[in-house]
Image: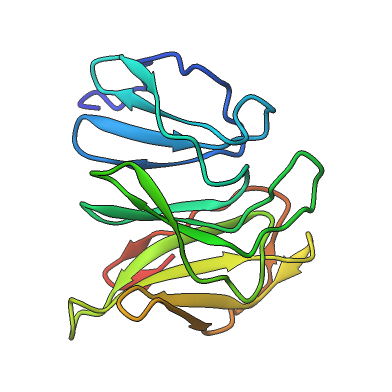
Length: 182
């Protein structure tokens, strides 16, 4: 993006409205789920050179959930709607082994969410302490609660409440900058 303009690099196999994705490495992105029936339980890889190939089948149908890369070998799929009917919230999480392209069941979240966002937070005093931050509603309207997954202990715990309720009218993005969740 040297000239700060968008450039199309590929056409995905399926439209993935309300899907999620991670950068697997510098050459490949994995995009999962989406709110079209053909995308519900599928994934695909988009390569920087424009190639597209189908990825592994998801452990369950998913859209408006989260997919977070934890490190170079694993990622986690969190919550979302199991479709095809709206508001079919799923509390399940699944770890994804990047080298093996395999899914394993993780711990359930306390508040299954519809439109939610997730991000990573690393403890600067203890870099091996990695947390996944989940923000999202279970009632389709608003929610001020957050949840933190301590990746090393595989346990969810309540996080700090948001200062204001998250409006769940559309997708959100959670990022960290200088150890602040944004």
